[in-house]
Length: 79
Image 1 (cartoon, rainbow, N blue to C red):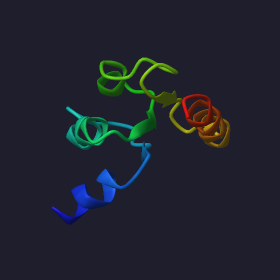
Image 2 (image 1 turned 120 degrees about the vertical axis):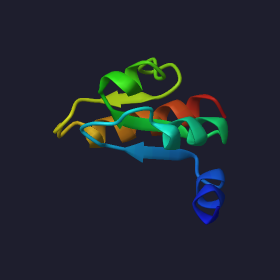
Image 3 (image 1 turned 60 degrees about the vertical axis):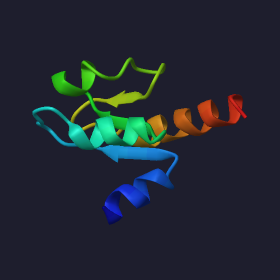
Image 4 (image 1 turned 180 degrees about the vertical axis):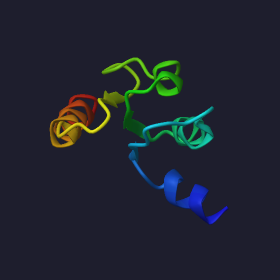
C-alpha cells in the first residue's frame, strides 16, 4: 500500500525489466497518472504506444537518458 502512495505522488514510472508477464505495476502506475518509461518488451508494447502514452526503451539500451529527456520535453509541452 505504501508503494502505491509513492507512485501516486510520481509523475514518472520507470521499469526496465527484460521479461514480465502482465505488468501490473505498470497498469497501476498508468491508472495513477504516472507516465511510464519501460523496457521494449511484448507485454509493455501491448499497453504503451511509444511517445503517445509512455516511452519504450530497448532492452540493454544506453538510450535511457534520451528517453528521460524526451519525457521532460513532453511534460513541459503539456503544461
